[in-house]
Length: 519
Image (cartoon, rainbow, N blue to C red; front, side, top):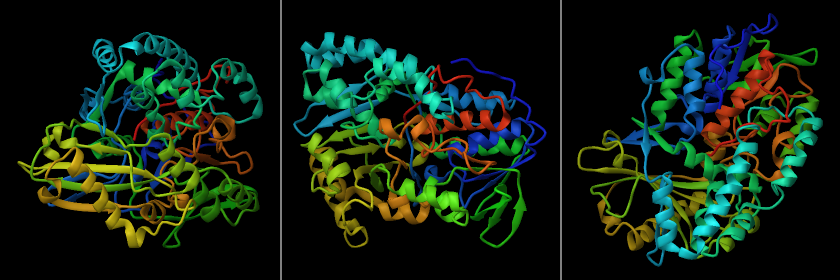
């Protein structure tokens, strides 16, 4: 992907910007604005940086709270290059290979690698009849990548005509067909159908409903691989924050924005929770889109109506996480592990359609200290495990009463199938439920990825990077185009900064530009 190393200069009308939230999207847009000469201030409600990508320590274990899969590293290096800096002076990205190890309860495993030879050997070992099917699938997914990644993500879809212009490509690529259905046309093995469709869950998408455009995740990972920052994901957050302050930006931690101010029908500034008001000609929200419209801008009639419309849309699933440490290493595991339960399609229906918290589950297990032993005390290991679960508006599971017992069930399952002796080897354990997504991160209904990425909630149909009714209001992050995932929200920052600075990386939506995945 071409990189413009010279940042555009801000127009005279854009002198001062506030960014609400210090997640990856907020940090990335703040860096772009500051590099263009805009005086930029980040407001972060929490006492720590990163939003969903926060961090905490307990008994010497370092736990990243959220995303752990970093792909398309060029989207990150570009931020440093725009600021005239070298990324190696701020953070180190280490390749992780295999990218994932997939497990099934019957003992079947599959190492998901970026290297073609290793990947083909695994496919041949698991299902020889699917070798040709994979090659045909990869040709299809590569074409989707070329159209849907190389040409679409950095284009802000600000009017319906932008969507009309890309419709022929979307139709030709069968974008209306769900990921799982598309994958199933190429693979006979149920294991491989799961292996090549689960990726959309990493950005909050239901493989049974998410557009087949998301098959682009596979060639994206094949092209660049998967990375992990030395020191954990939060080391990348800290590196980006230092880059921002090194070029003149200001960060105010523990300073929630209580209200986005307006005057004469346009944005005029922000008011923090202490009542302090400050004028800004531009405000970019990296906060939850419904929280922004409903709580921060609810005094504006157009925003209140928008919040109501957004509440009626489909929202992504939530997540249940257990952060834990152990006294020992488990031989079966690598850095990124995916454990499929005994059901796949029916479990997805429980999570996304029926709102049922099942007594079986599929899991993602992160084992970062296998790559970076500084994240655990000597002789110990650091982990987190997550289970996709319904959001709070879907079903009536009592997380306050039943969260710990649900965690007990997951730990017992891991002990039985993958981590023998786990419960007796634990050193620390802490849970994070959909209630925490709602209270800590202001996530609507505890959704972990904002709006569900369906075809009719993507591009023009997603929250626009620039609000059409309130001049001076912009969005970055999972709720706007292109969507969730670390490079996805960093891509949203490129699209949004392009609109603010007038350089419209969106020359025309006749080119479909990048969309990327990460947990």
